[in-house]
Image (tube, rainbow, N blue to C red):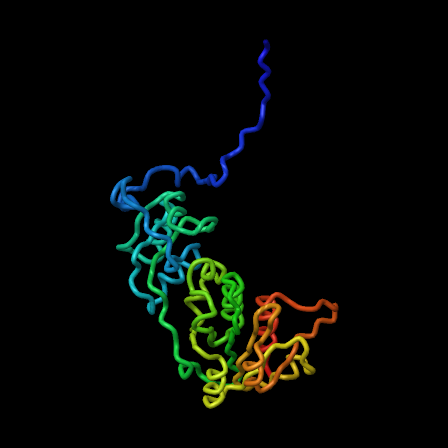
Length: 283
């Protein structure tokens, strides 16, 4: 009997992580940095929580925000540790770790870019903290729950000079994790309020001098016609559902983004970017 051997390509096992790192990152930690994570190989990893930030921009923005509490843990590859200490000086919480050690503390698939920070959530703002000056723009998100979308919206808000954002207390993601990564540091630049009831929040904002414009694809007027340079709250709803009826009734006006190409709708983060650009133009 003749045994026939068949060659097959080698494939990684399901769930395996392929880690590519630079030569410097593969080397051990440099002198002067703590080896991490501390406690030796028998230390149990921290439970994955929603208090982790990862990605270079998100972490560096958080470290540079004086409103943040002190970090609970800060892990970085040797190269990133050098960059962090060059920017922020000596960091007591800093631990040097390799890419896999960092990845083990985060949700699967997190693109951490060699750095992760565990820190308490930011304190939220009250509605009366937002200055209702001419031309000021606030964002209000009605049940926009996808962290990537909310992060991208906050990034656009920072880019176009919005004074803040208002999220629901229950139906909105925490300002950490994938959201903070998508926001690329905007979480620490855009003041955010969390409220229980958006309709009541709009009533309070009206008393403070704000005018609310809700985005609705079926509205009669275009957004540029609805904006008048007064302090404005731009209200955006979730994809598919849009702004809920009661919230829409508390808006001073509903307006649409004209789409001459005939496409029915935009992703909510894309719609927010267009609306913020339009609202940032001088009136």
